[in-house]
Image (cartoon, rainbow over all chains, first blue to last red; front, side, top):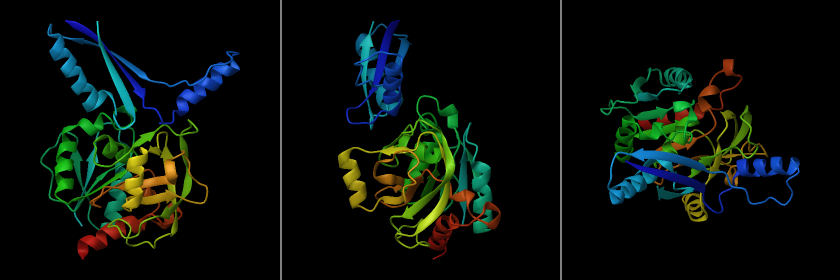
Length: 80
Length: 223
C-alpha cells in the first residue's frame, strides 16, 4: 500500500474571498503583518498498490478528473 | 416542446422547474435520474438548482461526474439545448460544458434576494423573447455564484457574445467578474445562469420576467 497526499491550491490571480476573511480574522486576533493567505485543500489517500509510478499516474488522473478544478486550482502530489 | 429535468440527490429546485416548464410549454417534462445514460428524445434538457451531493468538494463537482452527464454531453454535442440554473450552472461548468468557474460569493454570505439582470445578448435561442439591453427582475439564491474566468477565456466569451446575462444597476450579489450572471457555450445551445427565471413566471410569483427565457426556447423549437 502506498500513502499519498494531494494538495490543491488556488491559482495565482484567482481571488480568494475565504483567504481574505481568514486574514482579517487573524488581524483581529492581534497577529499583525500576516498577508497573502490562500485557503486550499488536502487529501490523504491510501492506494492498494506497490507500484509507485502507477500510483503517481493514477493520482494525476484523479486530480485532473475530480480532486482539482484546473480552471481555478493547481495541485501537487506527494507519495509517503 | 419536449423537455427533460435531471434529478440528483440534493437538487431541490426540480419541482419549481417542472412546474414552470409544464405551465409555459403545456407539456410536463420527463424526469431523468443521475444514473440514466439512455436519454429520451427531447428538445431541451434542464439541470435545476439545489445542493447536489451537499456541495461536497466543490459545488456541482460530484454531480458533474455522474453517468447522466456523459449522456447530456453527447446530446449537447448533437445540438440539443441544455439549460443549467444555479447548481445546474455549477454542474455544467464542472462537467466542462461551459467555460469558467464559480467561486464562493465575495461577501462570503449566502444571498437570497431579487436582482436586476441585463440581457446582454438577445440573439440566442434562450433570449429571443427579450430585447438587447432589456433589464429584467430575477431572484437569486446561492453561496457560490462568483463567476471567474482567466483573462484569455474572459476575452473570448465576451468577444463571442457568450455572456448572455449580466447583473445590472449595481445589483451584482456575488462579485462576479464583469457582472456575469449567465454564459453559453460557443455553439449557443448550452446556457448556464445563477438566477432562477423559473421562479418569476406568473402573477403568483409577483411578476413574469423569467418567462421569456422559456418562451424563447419554445419559439425556437416551434419554428
